[in-house]
Image 1 (tube, rainbow, N blue to C red):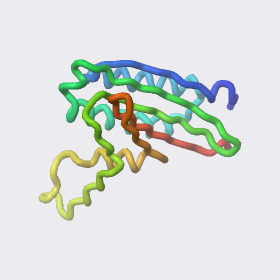
Image 2: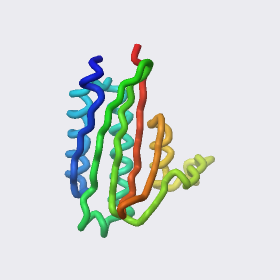
Image 3: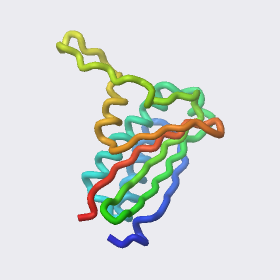
Image 4: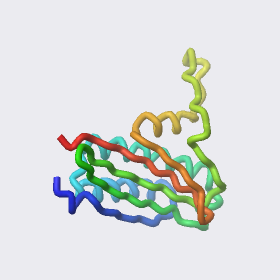
Length: 149
């Protein structure tokens, strides 16, 4: 892969509703493909993106109506790896998902409750998660990596 193509950054601003989630996924795929990101890595990142946006829609509905959600995609190449980092930024109340413990798996189907698995999915499908709150916005960065070889 050409390092000049890989070391780049792309941005998207959107309000978040069901249609914009599809727009965000299409943008992610387009930008990732342009950088030569393998399909399996795009799939992982898209699952995380959809989960992050679903959480913003569910828990930040009032803020999302007035403040856009910002997406930033940054690709980096190293000697032994390639990484793609997606930052999802929203103006909702400060919430660090990395301080929340994952829910334990239910022992039976009868004890299962809907929801609550989003953070587990984010942790499973990403190679790294980081969070910060500054300029009145949450910034969740989701990173996937793969070997250059």
